[in-house]
Image (cartoon, rainbow, N blue to C red; front, side, top):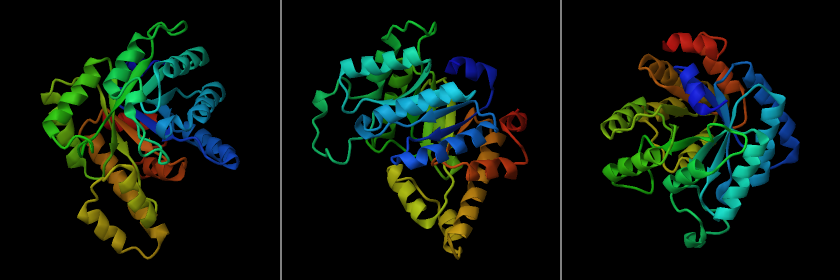
Length: 304
């Protein structure tokens, strides 16, 4: 289903993110978790795209399997880094032929083994250019063309310290043809509410969905901060984690914190919640249970 149809159908969306496993042995376990999460009736799911396109084939394979073996709508990540125009055209052609209708267009990260890569080799340096390119791509099988999402950063884009310029750049992505914004993870809802208000002041009118990632361990907490390029960890959350005896306790604290985030976001009419699952289903299912619902259909009732 096209993302614009999903937003029209679901006043509040609920979505999950997965990544292609590195080890072949982990694929069936991942798909088992995907099937379990399908029971929660998400609006859509997304599949990440490794730095510099390093998981290109695995991303495509996972997307196609989700499309063929489940009832889920799958969204593919796509990045600018390490890609020339011909490569991007071939990727879009494959998605068009495979029935994948939606793409999250990102600037992307450099692979760790190429720290001195010359970005001048890339067809596009910025996500706004990639959005425009996707919009201009002529599909043979998708009457509406691809649905396109872009990333937002409630705590500020790490590459743009000037917060006013940051909103200008985000507006450029939307004006280039983005249908919605999916935010980076955050732990303090005040950052999201401020970001949403600044988007409104900037004239950004597309749906903004909030990225949620429950903490599962102390090491995971530090890893999240690195992966999200410096996410701010509130003192209250750090204090709660410091009281924990082991990682099981940390996981319970993390799930509780994420549950309260979701509750508050729903109370404040968030347009959507996007769960970064880390390829597991337990924390997401526990959050649904803590909110007193069995699936996304019931959650939409709480959000109305």
